[in-house]
Image (cartoon, rainbow, N blue to C red):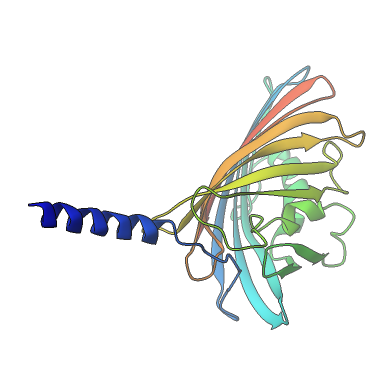
Length: 251
């Protein structure tokens, strides 16, 4: 009996050791293989002018080149669907359909210019943005930060479940947020991939906290790109509270 107990303990310790093994997180996308991204954004603005907006975007993202430790990725927006409720006024837009009324045309003017436009992103193997290149005509109306953060920040050193790391990123084109500061935690490895929890704060130009961010990512074990993600941001600015929930699915 004692022998069986000792053997059982040894087996359990072996499983614990396996579960706690360190992982060196590095992006490893397959060059030339496109990924399809489905992004759902639900935004609730509570303020002098309350607004509820649901937006669904579908994008193709293709790694096209690797040079040293940098990856070049091309992201093309294929479709956009938006439903907006501003109290006494509602609007809808679907890039796959002709606008049905003047309100749809008005909303379409804001989003139609994205369709079939390709943004080029350069990332290091640790997910750090190096450059974001917009096509001609979009550079003055787009936020580089929205594209440069397509990958969740990865730790510089190998980590095991329970490990944490910090990351900060400037948002020079965002009118409300100047910088994000986050703490990521490697929660676990499971059959779906590596699960990363993220939480942090959003800062304005004076380094004052104006909001929070929290979420969970599941990373593909082979490519280290996001397979699924749920991210929530809450911002208080200009007399309004803005809550956004983003759900990502990558195939």
